Image (cartoon, rainbow, N blue to C red; front, side, top):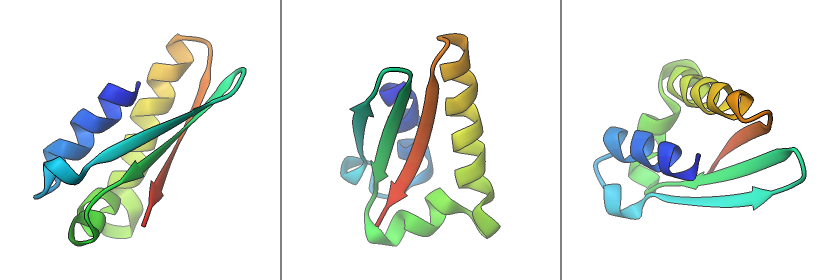
Length: 76
């Protein structure tokens, strides 16, 4: 899952070397913290949050296949 988030984020930003994904694992829920360069924050969030919502939907669908829950938080 972490690799999926990194791949999507690196495809969107101008500074792919500054993309970091941190995983916080629970029993049934995993929280992924996505950090990008401040100049790329708008690209990851998208207009009215559409890109961020799409990323969260993809990750949630992939986690559902593994009978888990996943949340993506975009950190500043």
